[in-house]
Length: 563
Ligand code: ARG
Image (tube, rainbow, N blue to C red; front, side):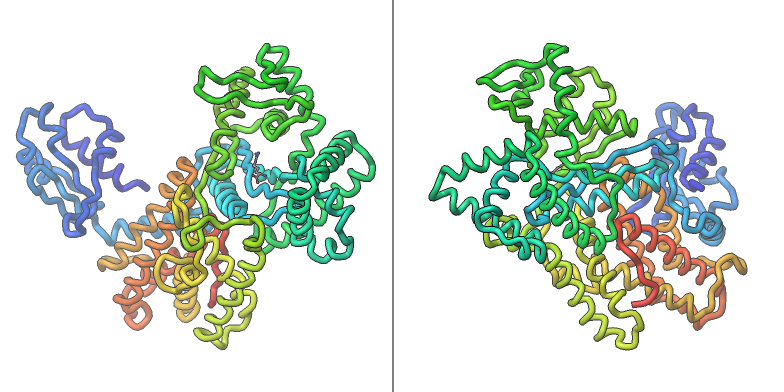
């Protein structure tokens, strides 16, 4: 139900020009000022072909175009301004949304093809950083949006569970570790050990050799090294799982870097077979000079493989396992070069599918203008942050709605939703300032504001005993419901745009705008007191709950019916 297209059809029917309907539609503008109507068509684009002044064309066309869709047409200079018939159009839009119900907004871009989404991907024995949190939230939202657009998303947590740091960790644990302590608080304790290692190694460099030796034992499959590694990994994953549960995020695969240990040799052989490997300072590299990129390091002089080697193996594994149509990597800005190199090497290997791989970078989370660090002393533990927002949300709820029944449950949805919304409402490349006070405001562009609007709309429906599908939708022609209904109509296009641009912030901004339009409607139109058009007004309210709830869901946020 594209009214712009319908208006374009009417214009087409009234002129002799050879423009396609779609081309006419793409010329139609939405006037900045509401007084200028809903659509404006710039007649100067027809002037040349029709050999007439644009003002003249606007005049003539205004007399010719008619239809139930149109309330009035005004020629204003070279423009033709269209005022739609609000009652008719509103009715059509509401009917369409109610028929689709929860499916409203689905876009048929894909047809079950798979998109792998590599996101979150924290490192074992290190705290879950703010960067990993951003990746988790953006990746989760992109997975949900992809599904809404007809794709199947394969959610991959490419855990950082391999590398020389495990040698260090084993040495630290064997020298200064305590099994019980690790069990009680794995990430904190392992990270303390890891930090301690660096402090001690500053004084005694031989520790580094010891660490290297242990990592070598690990790579060679030594039983003790393996057992410790697996234990560190399992304990860390249990901790990460708590965060994922709070955030409501799940994965299709937890294959981390270690999974590709036995899958790298074939990659190296293939590179050699295609004559792409060059020895440089004893290391094996793929030259990418023709792309103005530094060489991609494949194998170090001591034979050890690298992060990039594992990503090459992972990409090939994913293509053969999932036959992905697209592969997304939601990873911080600072790894842009790494992904350029990895994609370039895959293309050199002749894999066409490498053209469908996309690195989706994002900016940093700042605290007082500085990067939030997970390094020594300054660790911000994510679980603590989330617990803090949840308890703040609870305080606010106790104040606002002391009689609410499931306060704890709602506080969790609001506290977590606030953090997620604060992140996703910004275009991902922007750095964002981390401020719990900002996130939890019930006014302004926040998660709680949108959730609260949804709950308010739900409460109107409860009071009215509204049941969808009953009654007619006649009589809507006020300014306020019109602004709401027009926004409701935009939802599918917003979803499509956010998918195309890998940008959940479009949906976040949209639900804020919809909430604002709804709150104006609520403040200015007596929804329940005035029984006129009651069912039409309630249908608007219902569609708002449907679309806000679905919009928030696509961001990974729940919308409680009461708060
Ligand atoms: N573990 C890495 C880090 O924390 C991110 C991994 C991203 N995914 C990938 N396939 N390289 O920096």
